[in-house]
Image (cartoon, rainbow, N blue to C red; front, side, top):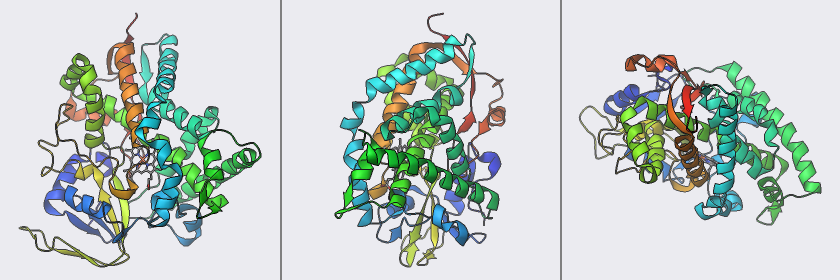
Length: 416
Ligand code: HEM
């Protein structure tokens, strides 16, 4: 059985997930030997059990010759106790209190980007290219200490990596492209790291270079992995949070109106509802460290208990968990006044997103500035037929990220 949403539903896989939650909550894909899980409680349980379920996944279909680059250990795919040690290098830098100090600076970056859009004299923009992409890319580049002028290169790299097709069948071209990108990033970071070793600067890369784990510095490859993880994870996800947020508000004008009328109380809630409704990260991988049986003792009508064997890969569809009707009332509704928002958009357990506070702050600032600087905002295409809406936008070419590569908008600036 194919466990992945069909490509046509890439930007809105809700119907597929709903059917899987109901009929095949634990499904097996014979094509690639992966299990797929769709229900909130099952997924949460696995994420909270790093002993039985390892994060040492790597893209599972990668042939041997690409393993070195694409299965390289990083914070994201190591297990305890090493994971704890790696995470402690950066944990305290990303706590909300530290991140909140960045607020005025991020606000300046967001305002400068809107100035650039307005100064062009047009009343149209591509929200993704002109705003949603450069905002988090600039912030993470500055935090790391890499030149933010190189952000077009980062975008190309990130596109090459996120477009790695993860489906029932192997797609060797996308694997080759991702592999080459990792090598290019290594060359880029090795030059930068050499410079920073000679003259340390006050940034994340210098901090990682000087860090010690059990009395040892990280190896060069470990430093490369850390840097590329932070650079990529630090922007590809937040770009989609901002794009998905604005799309969802324009798709649901009554929610947009409520937000405009109650900005102070609803901005944070609109971010959380977007993380639930259109979760930028759609799935995560784990590998069973032991034989496990799911649904034991709670078999339901039509649902058999399932045995997952040691070494088998499991794909956890966060995007489906976040629409689970047993957890969220009326889950297919985008509702920014929703009360229960315990979504899994940032994962849970020991690998809970390191950058959650940063992503939330960037999302809130982006929304606040958009509301402040534009009198009106609408799709720059005919959206009279809601059924047709998804055909008018360009979904991101990615199996595991949900987002848009472009979002054409029409606007009126507030001071015109
Ligand atoms: C809306 C934006 C974001 C979303 C939806 C998101 C989502 C996630 C998710 C679901 C995980 C869990 C991975 C797992 O359990 O295997 C994760 C981990 C991680 N995220 Fe984020 N992320 C976002 C923004 C960021 C930012 C801005 C950073 C920059 C620092 C970041 C860095 C990381 C890192 C380093 C990890 C690995 C943590 C670990 O394994 O201990 N993320 N993220």
